Image (tube, rainbow, N blue to C red; front, side, top):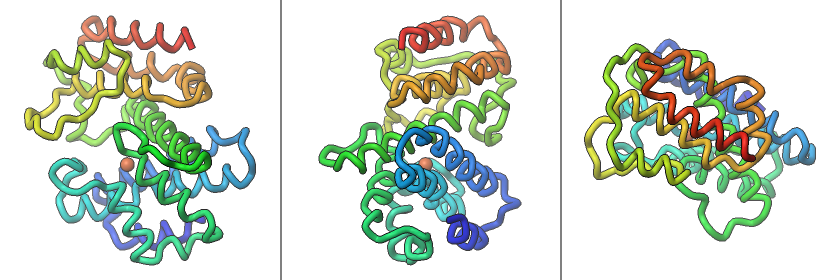
Length: 244
Ligand SMILES: [Fe+2]
């Protein structure tokens, strides 16, 4: 199932930091989607692997065209990815029956939205949930290992500033919605809080178990400067995970 992905990615410069990041992220998410779907049917597990690998196919062109991964000022990379799979015939090169196309498309389309759209079939919903969790787990796991784009996060940032709206959102146990109107660049501290708040949107206990078993939050915490300032947020999320 990797061949069509490899073919497509080979049109881009894999030495470029951003392209390489998304290429590797795609394989990591595929692997995480596989772990999360282990207890589902073979069919669902296979679909979860495909969706994991192809979910960010829209990122390559987004980076090439705009040198940015910010959907607000470029395009919605998930909608674009679905369009690409269909119009460029990529989906036809993946060894999967056509009856599964809707599931793949709906899951990819919904992977980056604040909430999953209404009206999905149970299978579409299941796969939207798997990819959303796998994607978030990779972001948290990568950052905990220090894997991040330079422009994305600076672990040695000494500044600690978090705007009120992000703090309020965090303490309502809600994933933080990116306000496209708000043009103030996010600080590293805000990005960390946004990553932590992703945990409130996880769908499966298995995803939460993964974070706990792999010590992800502690590893992330230990990378940060000004640890003491982040402590209340990490304590809060750790408690949330314990309560599950
Ligand atoms: Fe994405």
